[in-house]
Image (cartoon, rainbow, N blue to C red; front, side, top):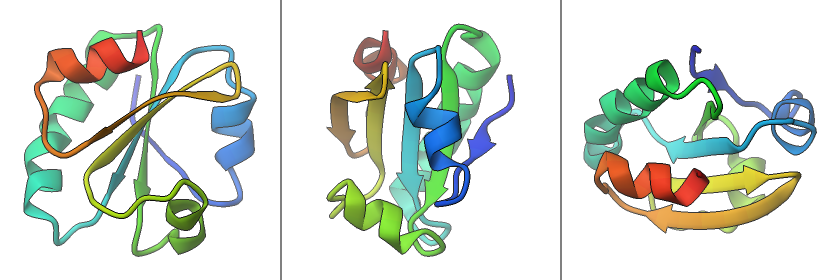
Length: 102
């Protein structure tokens, strides 16, 4: 499954109303650790069909970053049944992200 780019307009439909667990990657194009995590996020999207994988560019979606208190990037949120189920900040191993959302 492809990574879904989230905006304020599609956030509720893609995340809060999702019937699958959602992994959200808050990132910025200029962020080194975010660039390191990009391929990991893409891998999860390709290998884990039971997880919806989404990305939010904090420079383009400032209100979403503020809504979830994102102060450092990359920040990863796991959302299950419309509730935040976990949060991880920084570059981490793939297994850590999978543990967050599964």
